[in-house]
Image 1: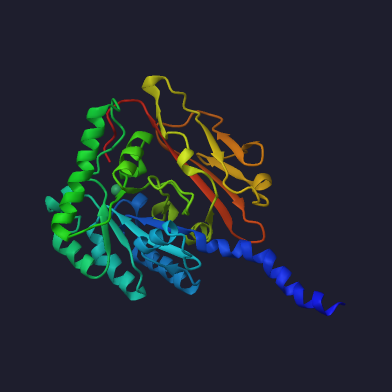
Image 2: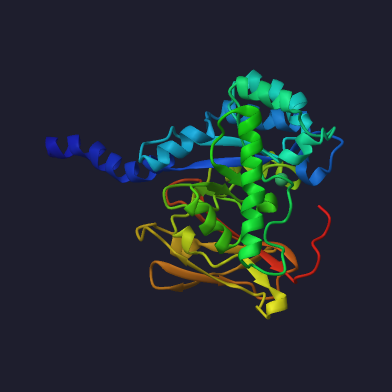
Length: 357
Ligand SMILES: [Zn+2]
């Protein structure tokens, strides 16, 4: 065999592998927790032992738990992230995070972010942290950010008029001001209560310089929708490590997320509740995606319909239930054991009074 050919073989092989492995550094996955408790509602809780199980898994499997600000900055500045980058977030500023979560996160030396509703803190709710606890967290390097003033449903309203938008932005601005007054500067980040938003709110937040987070699953990359960034819920039925492993190792399906259909379906306005989701991929060379992509809607598998190489649609084959629904799509990544992941949350809303939280 030609000596030059022998030398170039490993380089050829590297060339084949490189575009795939390098991709891990272009995105990161965010975990979403609420309670660390054995007594609070199971749907949003996991026990200290389960939580430590997650942290231990991240450690022994060489995940890099990084802080949200540097993860966002790396993507926005086009700089590489560490491989297997994970961000830990908590919503609602429950006191059990301070009592049960903080000691464990310190033990593993993992940074994290807490999204805070300011009214319960101002009202000294016994289940939420106090301002002193939050100040202590901040001093220890924890990032604190906005989860609205009162955790109200932001888009379950009769009308999306100017008055609605003003009141919603007032709610968000009030919380931002309270956080700043009590804690000093905080990032302009909003976690939507219940992960619920609509296109109007996203646009208003974009114009005001906010980055915003939902509760649909998936990873964050340059092509993400920065006013609806996904997070993987990791408590309750999602706390099982077996299923979490796949999500931790997943990469975001490269698509134009900001072009997704408005997520609110208003039954009172006659909108049909088997919404059609158009997805446009941003990279055509994704081997296997077209053949192996499968979607799940309310637990049922649904084949996407392809229109050319870059576009597909997916649609529920029966009516979605009132409240929150998700379309999740995954495809194996060629040459890896991992999956591409994509999710869109829908809110089917009939204009009635919202249920109690
Ligand atoms: Zn919340």
